[in-house]
Length: 86
Image (cartoon, rainbow, N blue to C red; front, side):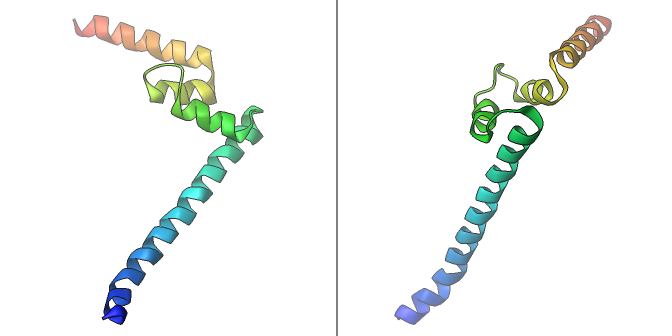
């Protein structure tokens, strides 16, 4: 009976360990990007990614990689498009 339980549990355990390894590797890659290209420690980059400045995470990511001026330009374009739709 124990062998039968082990037979069904082993794939699940293997799957969970694999997901854990992939998750840890993903966090390492994000931290490495933050450290290498933006001068922040990786943990600060992950904190920023989770607790961004604005409510819109996509704008936060664009702000991080492209800068504030690019985000302002996108917001202005969206405002003009909204006026044109009215």
